[in-house]
Image (cartoon, rainbow, N blue to C red; front, side, top):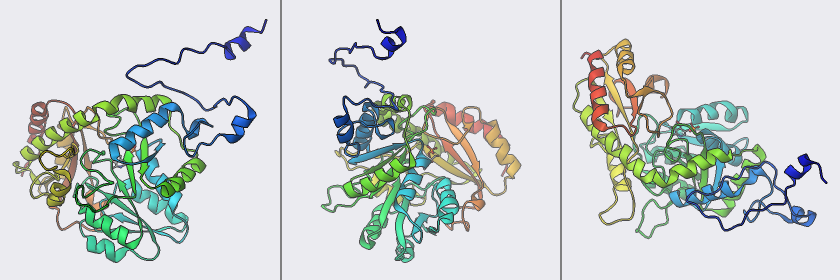
Length: 407
Ligand SMILES: Cc1ncc(COP(=O)(O)O)c(C=O)c1O
């Protein structure tokens, strides 16, 4: 008789295949077993027709990738360990020494840091363009430009750009466009079909998404995705992803699969509360400006309306993420602003948004931009991420903390 250790590892039992449940199975593997040497030699991982190694996919990650393609309107998807890893995968897979990348001036900070760090060390240059001025993007694209990043809305300051105009410029100049689609989450607009029903095919080349935010929805998972609709571009990214050794854990993939069915409902709930609170804040003297793309007067409001307000009867979800920022009147001291943030009881101090708990972060805008944007009032910027608590309770929380600000 075989030793029990061997029998436990090489057990012959195979469960019946006809099992169905609402959630897909969680397959965990670094090693993938092949039936014979011929199969081992023939197996192909790039077209997802089989399995070769844990990093190249399991049934659990393939299922998640397909669902994310459905969410965002893409055809190919790669999973990576964080949203920032998704940004880095695009840059490291597509750029080489001598190339230039263009970033919107309101880009997600760590994307700028990557450009100023590793990319600069490797001889890849970066220039910022004015996210609200397509002519500035057109002027800055040079014969070295290989990648243009887009964000809608911009990080922290939430200006909404004329995304179709920016993408048209990239297409006309033959430069790859990559959108950080975390704010829109595949729900506010379709990144691969920016002018639906117009007959014009206009979409970004690449959409990256910090699944850490709304797709996870719990504030407890870090993951990112890179989605495309072009097989050639997808292969370049897939080869970079493979060489960098990027993969995600099966339990994290499962957590995102579990949350995805409720993403549209949650997104709408975050959106509704954020709009109520942003509206309320815009009537308060302590706030010199409230930034939320759905508020009339917020920078880029008309572009948000054009892209994210679906026509009546349309199948599009539309809407906005649950984020808004305020510029606290410049007469309030930094100590007062800090006391306001500390006094909030339901809005907790923390960065990663998209979960059930409301969050607040004070920022130093002057250190994030080369100069103070003309469309922003002077003051201290505070960003709120609105969770799934009652909007009335959140408003009461803001109201009591305002006692710390005097104008
Ligand atoms: C717009 C945006 N993109 C990307 C990321 C990065 O996501 P992660 O935290 O998963 O690296 C964040 C995180 O805050 C973000 O706000």
